[in-house]
Length: 267
Image 1: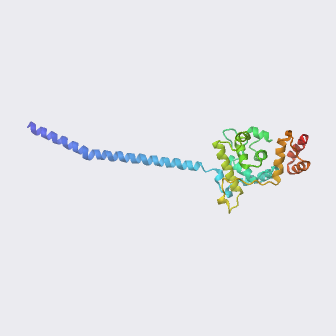
Image 2: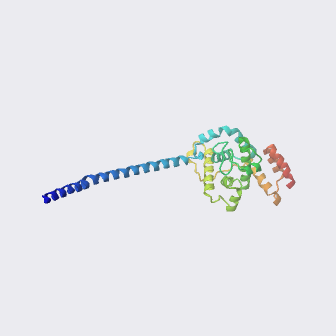
Image 3: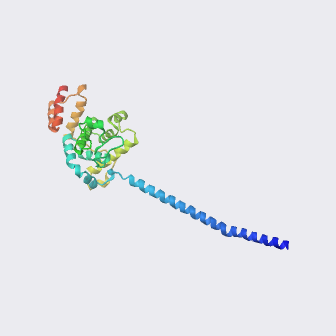
């Protein structure tokens, strides 16, 4: 009798073990595999979402089409054109700087304290004659005067001018070129991209080479740049001829003409 009971117990135990091995264990493995697959899919979905957001963030204003850039600049076209004419700076360069600095947002303000369309620092704004950096006309005027100064200093080189606008003329002087700062190098590339886009005709726009050095037109602007260069070096013996000074005075605005007259003391 005891043997029979013992045999029955062993049989039950064996059946339980078989059930665990052949039924419950595979089921457990299936559940684990399913959970792992779900987790993997969730992680992949999260990764794809982050990638999509990252790609969305990298779409910058300088990558817009020429038509869209001109459309965004339309509101400020009159002011940009006047500043370009008064100070001998390409309207495309002014617009390219605005494109990268603020994407045409007049109330833009950076964490470093730069403000307005052309993102002027307080000291730069005062240096070039404006106190209200959020006034679009004053901002563009002061920013363009700063560009004129930089173009004169760097012999019309747009690449170095853009680098100095971002990192300061001292940094460009120190490295004798575009400073090795990643942020500045990216900034220069974006400015040149917008500059070429705005300068290109619709037929050649798609073939514009971002690395190509932009051509600087020297006609009216050349005299103004020469004036600025010689004014900076006046104390070192360089002089403007009477003919050059008269020609520059005709090109400058009334305000700058007065400054030019005061400059005669150095001649």
